[in-house]
Image (tube, rainbow, N blue to C red; front, side):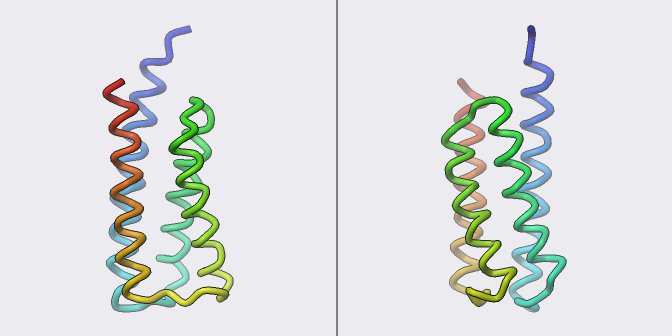
Length: 106
């Protein structure tokens, strides 16, 4: 079975999710408790994790799972959203993009 089309769709979806995640993180800088932005960051990592798992991209799954878990703790109020955490999450977003880029280039 040829999965090239599905992989290309995955790469396009990841690019869009990472863009949405960045937008949400930037929105959180001015409103750190905004539930929609918090959910957007969580959803991006959750979706990338799930789709990456379908293709067996274990490094992507393992990394995004950690970020997803962190965001779940933020959403539940166990960890406060702070500017340093936002900066770290932006780094996580970039790292996820690099992991996916590495996969895309073989």
